[in-house]
Image (cartoon, rainbow, N blue to C red; front, top):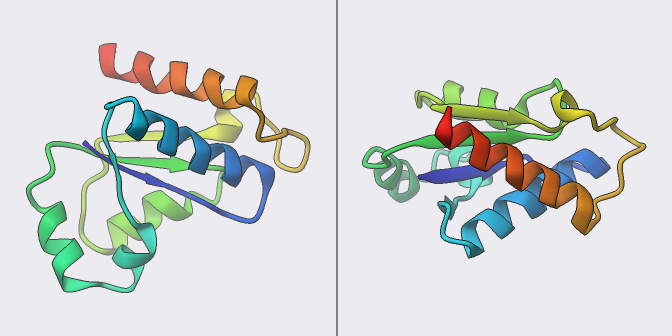
Length: 112
């Protein structure tokens, strides 16, 4: 499972990034480089073709992670959007509590 977070400039982007990093450290999946996808780095794109699942974790409704992956020709198996989970851009600190809430949402997606 490859995890592609939006690491945007807003607090919700930071929640996305920190969520993916903690999920990866916990063995949930492997965090991968969204900028490499956007830059069409050949070796990265080849590695992605064998992924069992591709996840986009976006900070807001702009869906930059999902759109970048889809524009590169990859199907997104799961899409988490931070602002769909009760967080508001510009008003949601990237603290441990908020990151833990998103980690729980990610684990819930696996059992759905």
